[in-house]
Length: 358
Image 1 (cartoon, rainbow, N blue to C red):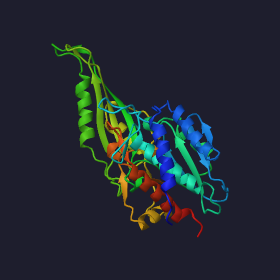
Image 2: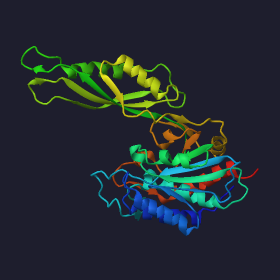
Image 3: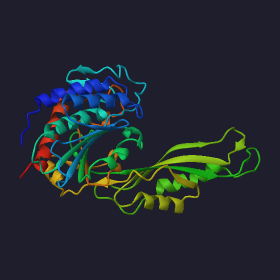
Image 4: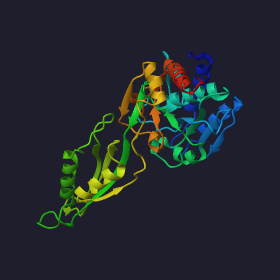
């Protein structure tokens, strides 16, 4: 199925420019939610809102049909100090649209909204189509997609919009952030007193560095652990009685987050406390109809090392979108206008091979 995307692309780019001009840091997305709500209203598409989340359901929704969810986020990180352009001024130069959130994940979001608009009023689809523009993805917050899911119809599979150069991430690593505390005993540094908590932390960090989980995922590779923060001590002549450090753990489909956590608790001498175990690994079978549809179009599959709202879904899900993950959170972020057009065309065609009547 070949879809004429010129009008859809023009509308999507115009919407993205509006979104870029509105600051939408995580937990402060109310104005971009207003913008998306107004865009759908102008198209006479009814939508619902919960806090800063907007969702809509296709006109001919039927409860007996399976449902596909199209999801992306409209929150952004804060611009880093290296920006030389105004992050809230949408600027087009040499075919690139510059602005905060243009690549992550504004291009994906507006392309999915355009795709939803294309299918919204088509009767006799084999699947229902739900679009959700959600908040707090950048901080893995609980007032985003996680809040919306109980209000949606049961979802059979989902497409999550993140910049993947329109390749299909058929698996995604989960994430646990774990805070650890090594306990010692304070003493004077000039004498043989106390138990240095830093040295105890070092022993645990050595174990983390050396340990390899035996099961390796075919699509996601090994579980990866990285110590990313460490703090101890108050003054130079006092042996510290506590040393805290943080582990970034990227989990795979070979282990549950709970199983990985148990291994750490059994082997580390430090206190081990996870901030959350809710961001689980996710995947979709290579034999799923949407993956097969994408492969029939020449799209590539891979396992993603980064985490998105896909981790909150409990149904088969595919991560795919225009843009490049390498541009995310960088200064002078941009997306090629051609990537948006290609994204809309690819989304509509790959879904068309799945959701149109036989």
